[in-house]
Length: 114
Image 1 (cartoon, one colour):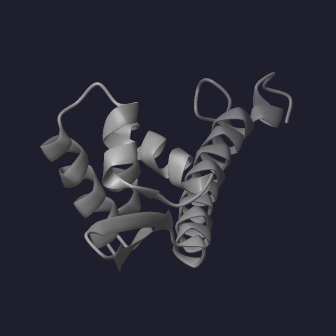
Image 2 (spheres, rainbow, N blue to C red; image 1 turned 180 degrees about the horizontal axis):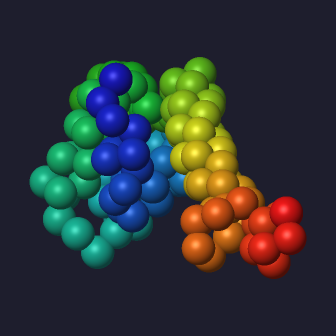
């Protein structure tokens, strides 16, 4: 699976996912929603499909797109885990900074009495 952060960093791809979350639709339906060309929509669909976030179903000459719920849940879990790890690291650094004080010494020894 491609880097989910890169895939979801594009506003158009996020809007496509939002639309598909409401229900299956065709490429033509999506083209009508955006102020971009049909080839640009196709490119975004390919990125989302390659990332495994959407599915394509062919019926006659039409392609219907829908979200892959399991893949989206997995992507959400991975994003959440990465964000939690980043926040844990930042909070540990903040805690260490506060405990050390401005001069780098432990905060409880700042007054020179301890």
